[in-house]
Image 1 (cartoon, rainbow, N blue to C red):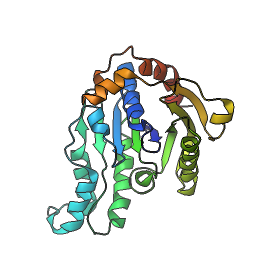
Image 2 (cartoon, rainbow, N blue to C red):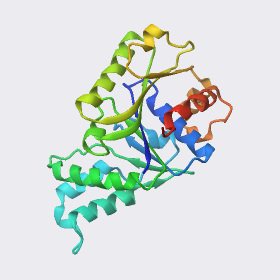
Image 3 (cartoon, one colour):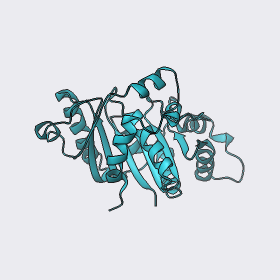
Length: 250
């Protein structure tokens, strides 16, 4: 069964960057097969990982909703959705990537959402590690991917507003009945560790802070992939020390 790591955080916290760096670390350590899932329609996880997206799950659901008659004869709707999802998985260097997107059409997606959750559950079992880059509202976790995670990693800045938003995300997992075994907090783009009072505002295990990393900003500005980031950069060094706590299985 894949070890599911759900990433979350409000826009602008660098959540997608941290998610990509964790994919990079898992790959470099050779800890097993990896599926990176971009479940935030506002993010660009595939771009940051240097992967060309074939199609999004949202586009697949739109096509099926608009043209149910296009399902091949002799193939059930369930099997067709499963086939389309498997086909949409893109291969990166040492990992796979899946982009969820968001359906845009007016169709009813209740049925396909139920099927998609079952398909995703089967897909997750095929990988040792699954990292899901979520939007702050956790829509895909609640409707289309999986309602459980081994670890929830919330990314925040050090502001009071940011930390309150981080706690709201953790509260949301309870409201949506998303089961998480462990919850973690990382303060991003901050040169000083959060105080006990600051990190204590969020009911999660505080892993530490990641300083502003000029190497990442330069690479991002040039549209480069974080897979090409030098291995001795500050962010990778810090994540190496705290990453074990995120993906440990007990």
